[in-house]
Image 1 (tube, chains in turn green, yellow):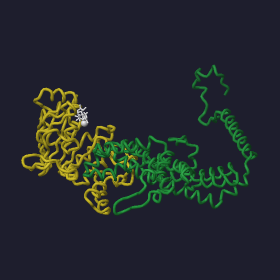
Image 2: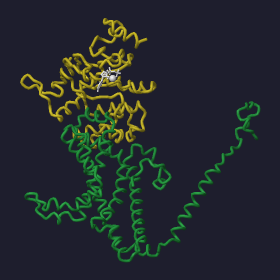
Image 3: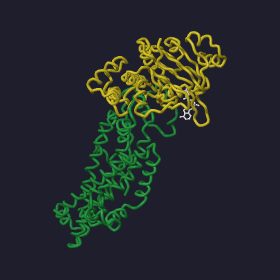
Image 4: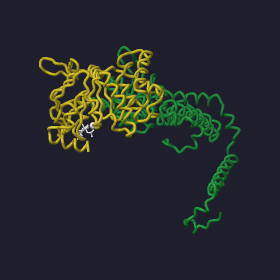
Length: 308
Length: 254
Ligand SMILES: Nc1ncnc2c1ncn2[C@@H]1O[C@H](COP(=O)(O)OP(=O)(O)OP(=O)(O)O)[C@@H](O)[C@H]1O
Ligand SMILES: [Mg+2]
């Protein structure tokens, strides 16, 4: 069948209709091929540039598994995990307080967010690190009486700085999450006789968690990267370790690449973990999403995109 | 006939707008009472005042020997702590227009939640009783589905089973079929008809005049926050005394 564009709207008479088994010819998309090839070429050029550039790849390979780097990465993971736990705990505590009936509690939570979300995290890290200048001794009657410098080690300062800052963001996230659980859920729980505490724990929070899980995943990934800021307060995490090495051997870019590879490995593992967590907590909609797989994630349009 | 619920002088305002203007109502055990009335007349608000989802500005509700939310203390109504109010609320089952099933729990999980958390039942016992109730509303086959996988009529039948699981003295229904497609209304009304036959005390806000005529022992018509007519369905629906009730009924029966 040849059909000129001008004839396309003209009537096809019933007598001319083809049979039910008439073959179907798909529309070709030459544009997709062209743009695909262009992007592949571009990637190849960039890849080649790095391969032949002034980078000693053997050095990268050598330091990738160096003991100092691995130990540093261990600290990076530990700081991130501790800070994330602290952030989540604070986020839920203050997020729930933002919905309190008590205006004083609501105000306290608001104040927390205002201060810690309103100042740079690097600044907060430096303040925690130097907190001994303000409070030389940590004294809680009957419990602790020590010099502040002994209590707030670089590790403690890093966890406090990153965790308290993350908590201020998560407070807002949890507050929004709680607010977006349908009001009827609460009323139904009340008519069953559930107390406010039971309603929060068993009905509201599980649904909040499900709503904010993608954000928590982003937080975990962000935290892994932000932990590199601890390098500035003499914490021997991975970036700090890498810096100490390249100050000696001068292989700056090689060691930074080593760090990049480890960070990418870490964030990749976290992305996979996030996929499975979301699937687990999204059980009520499992029927519609369970056939998706994490490795197809790269092809998905991003729902929430991370910062920095 | 012993009384199950007695509402005395219920008034409720939102801001300066008075929605309920001093309502009195008595419901006896085993009775099915239908509340009719035009949209915005305050039917939902009244029902929500009865189980204290809304606190009346004045007046009170007596349910089976106790005043909802208060304790009579030296001629004053002393507000009860939230825990005791919730215990009272669990004596009244509530079925919502929009079901309000717990989205993160299965059908079975929804029905056992109250008995386990509020009454402290063991899981095995709660599940056994829940399955009986789900059988009763024809939803036993979907026990492990999540609410998002059910039709509206199925959700509402599960919601009814969830309320019944608390063994309430009285069941309250707020337009239980209004959010349903017409072909799903029948299955929910059938469950309610069976409950009525079984002697359950029910207060039903509804626009289903046919259901009211057939099942109700008594019908109440509310207009502008007042009860304008009350009596047997046959009498109220076919021969109302109040002219505004007559206009309302002629519109919905037309
Ligand atoms: N939380 C609230 N805040 C302010 N006004 C309210 C609130 N709840 C109800 N109202 C008002 O009270 C009036 C009565 O509402 P109600 O929901 O009780 O009516 P209804 O008889 O149930 O109507 P319908 O048949 O449409 O459900 C309405 O004018 C409504 O706008
Ligand atoms: Mg209503």
